[in-house]
Length: 69
Image 1 (spheres, rainbow, N blue to C red):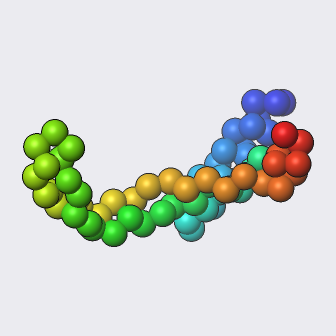
Image 2 (cartoon, rainbow, N blue to C red):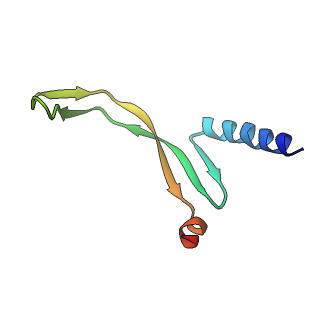
């Protein structure tokens, strides 16, 4: 029974993730973050390099979790 509930929760979360975010009540929210292209620097050589745009994950802690810490 526990596996079914957990599996259902993951499927629902996967569908929400397709919309851009996934929230675990009492824990926090995971969201997609689009990172723009930018220039960076190689710390060893000092050479300027181009860093491509990318998609990353952003996490926001729930207030209940912050309060419990």
